Length: 138
Image 1 (cartoon, helix red, strand yellow):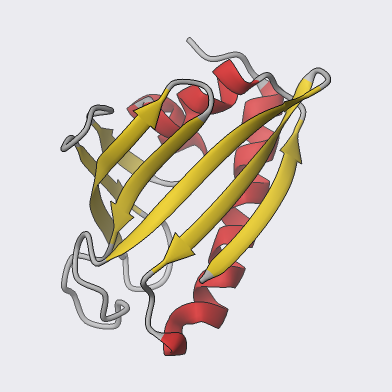
Image 2 (image 1 turned 135 degrees about the horizontal axis):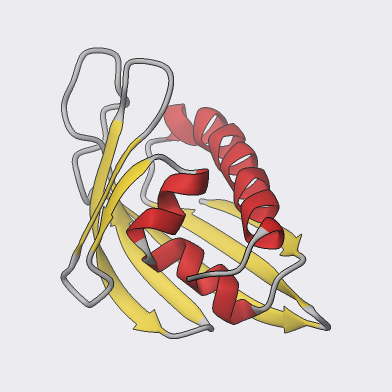
């Protein structure tokens, strides 16, 4: 299991939007399709590397507090061997003054991918923090 936390200088409502709105997801994660409802698609074509495409679906959504989605990769040369929806990510948002603490848990990954995925989330959460702090949600 991977666990990471970051404080973002933006309220939970804005941070939530950066996880559930396709246009805002694109600002920090990659070209995205998001249907934020249980069973709705979450697909992100990430930049760099072998052009990996993350695909999963939203499982639970408690606005401004918690969201859970499945996570895996569309098959392609050089991408990690985790089938679409093959692991699970839980995001918790906790108000912290004028900001938000984002707690991330990623379960179900093969041990061989934990280091790479830990580094990836650290980079992506940093990008999220910068984007969410920089501009309001639509």
